[in-house]
Length: 283
Image (cartoon, rainbow, N blue to C red; front, top):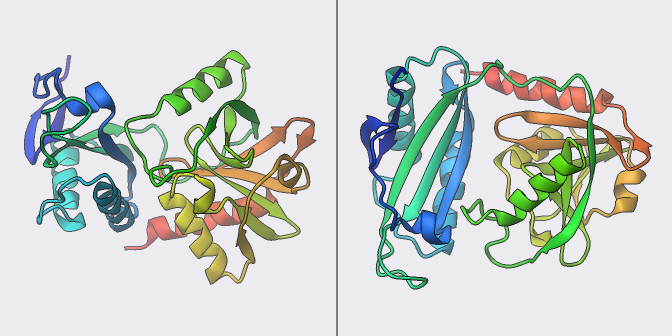
């Protein structure tokens, strides 16, 4: 077995080295945050946005943010890890931050540790799926709107349960709803609807994850004078739409082919994928 490496608190260690104890708060209480980032064309896409979101989330959870925890230092560590693991193509990066051990529900410290992992991908760049996704709603557990609803935390049982439902119903993805019954996101993506050339997506106040790729899509729309509205999404919004697509940092964009008895095209969605790949080629 070829050894692979990760970075724990700035130090390069083997993935198989037992560096984290069973008393780790991420393991015991989900007291953690994470970012998934794409390495492509020799660079880490949108790393500044990812680290900014992570630091804001750490502040929300009252974690201490080290002075040297910034995008420049994190980028250097990631690139070191990619080189050490001899990754030649695109890769998925996961940066996890967790509060240091001590205490039960109430922490004894707000100091943090961090872990960086990388895994090579089979794909290159942002590729639109050839076959549209088949999606439906997961409403068994509704997401509550709180001050931590928008954060990417290790407390992810809602997404786990939605993922299990997706598998059992043989869907490609499930759409989650908030306490008001509004559609807010999928198992791992933000949701966009296109109607008559206008873009619609859930507002952050509805409880969706504050996605980095969501931010890029809204920026592309603004730069290309495409009307975009952040407003609550309902079943009617989706069934009345011309196109629906999902966004996350790794896949970029995936288009939805069917929601309930509604079928979609992807002509406008292709435009956004092209614009994302233009960003990928920029130095």
